[in-house]
Length: 88
Length: 532
Image (cartoon, rainbow over all chains, first blue to last red; front, side, top):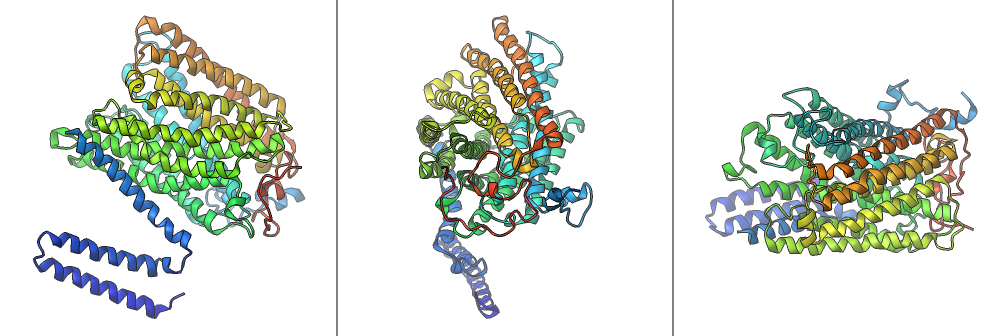
């Protein structure tokens, strides 16, 4: 199990990524702006899941379960939008 | 206090006395019993509403209540039966009591969250009941709260919907607790494929509770926001989409059907091997079919919306996907029947209730195919056929399995045995009343009687009359069954630790179990259904 030092480092990483989000937002990336923000947010979630929520130290089964909600929401959104796409 | 009571959990009160030792307890067994009593309390309220509805429908025109009252009564019957009885039903009550015992644990993973979920349940239930008597009249939307009517009606929808929101929180917490418990607290040697199949079904249910219920919670909050602040999520006059509400509602409420039925299937799977005195047929097939039902349950919600104005291609896709659920359901039914084949069957009441379950659930399931097929659905949609179908699956299915499980685990929970003959007689009356009540509804539906109608044409009178008479017989059966069980709690003979000769872990400890379930942590060396 990790000590406080590692948590502190991860926290610094999260702060750095937040700063990066702010910089990217002001950089005038146009259509790529949203993609950049979402990618940075994804990287931050991975850090939190892996270190603060201890997924890094779990067995493969528990790590795999992370994808259940992701798949579920993809299916829900996919099938709902499928209807809306064909309705009009 | 006798020595026997001394070691049971009824004797270890914890820090509090009297009622507080129950409503503040973190013992999963006490919380399970709290749920059991409160669930059946609400059940009887909803039964009364149901009987009143049937009484109103005994003849065409007004009989005992106004049309507005009738709308409120069927709404509350649905809301209470669905959200307060059958969704928490087996998992929160018997699941809470039995799950840690069956996996050899001392308690669930989060005992305090377990207690909190009961408090959410009671708060939600109270809010729903208070909505009857406050504001400008009880809600009259039907249990589905469909927009735009639920936004525009002046009745007390907001409070009722908030109550259901709290019940959703309760359900999610229970699911979270069970999934974590199954992952973390299994006894040494209890590998995944050594778990009893009731646990597999609770595990699959837990995932549905975690993943689907938040969708309902969000949808209901959006509805409340729309009612209170006039947001335009769903109101077409403000650019909203009423079909979006139906999508979101059924994204939860269809998987919720499997929250209701999966634990029932699990309980039945425990009972059959014990009373057939042989191992279950197709252990892994049943375990995986629970997971498959839970997964496929997410893909089929659109079949509730075939006449709502969804796109034609979506209708065809949802109709096709709906048929997939029939496969794992069929696997279970065939495996139960195959498990009985060449067994040394003991026809005790838990097995009789179970066999009734298989019969009634099969009728419910097969008529589900009529509803799932797009062409026939258009014909029966919104008729009494649907009412008959879901009462066969939910009451004939889940509730009969609940009663079976209640009889099966009664000696473990109370340490006493109910009287066998009255239990069988009650089943006979229940089963007869059930079919007289609900089977005419299939015919009414085919003949075109729409559901939720207060009045009807004279041509439907005969079947409505038969159905109402059935409701009286059914209630008589319920009273007989509960009288026998409640009487036996106090006056039943001592049952012994393992009266059925069951082979799962809960039967290895004393009845009722001690506070921490086992004197020492059990070590598991083989599968759950070993009979000589």
